Image 1 (cartoon, helix red, strand yellow):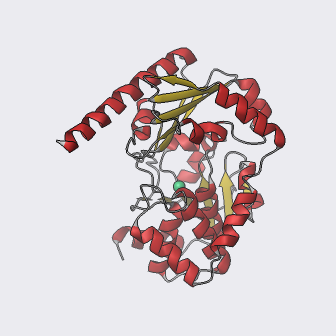
Image 2: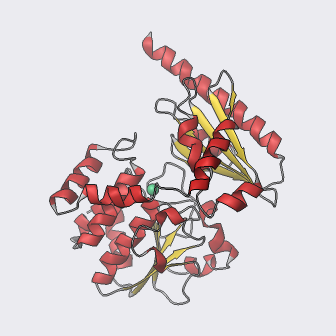
Image 3: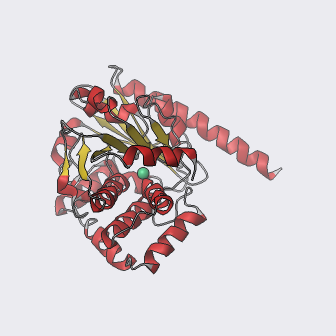
Length: 340
Ligand SMILES: [Mn+2]
């Protein structure tokens, strides 16, 4: 057992009440990982609270137990586990509620698999082994600790891995990720059943089908179509976000254009905040670097950033396009070099 894993055990074992914390951008991996940990730790007789500073998006409501996630940190607990992020920027809600200091006064473990440099300095342990999903880390920890996994926990871990690995097809998917899924199937996880539950969530309200068409019409192409952008104004965020996160309706389609390698979707908030979701194609993994330029982060193929310093959207967009161009040039130069 590595030293870090041993330290994690030393924090979890004596704690009677553990809070599991998701970032302000919850997804299927962070929620399924939280629920799996909850299942495992309650089986050991511990009390477990689930926290996320923002409401869980409705597309995650197919995961049983999502309703137990609360947006206020409990007053009493012995230890915290932050899942799926190692970045303070994604824990802003905690700060806003004045609860960060409270959390920091307890032993905190971070379990994350993102490449962005961690900066949660109050955590006792930041554990970031190579993994395609936080669910994969939890599975490996369960193996090291000899934790029993119930059918529910195994289902949740499979959901976490399959979601973040895009069905075991993403660049970060390792042989081990695939092996873990095989082990889970061996122990009774039914993939077609999980997939049909997930696909149910792909069905949308009829008005979203029209809205998707509108968004696709508004996509702009830049720099010889290498970069595609679309912008969602506040009125549309307000109207459609309760139904679905608008960028997710079109980001994948945007980078299907023949020459497009990077898709950026900007959202403009009422208070002047601008956020961007970025996706790049395989072989052009510049999304993390582009986001980091603006203080954000993520993976080479999927990332995001947020600007709140009052800069105008037009300036941010121009800068994002030019930074993306430079990054793509670099990739293309490297590719050209490879063939010589
Ligand atoms: Mn994840």
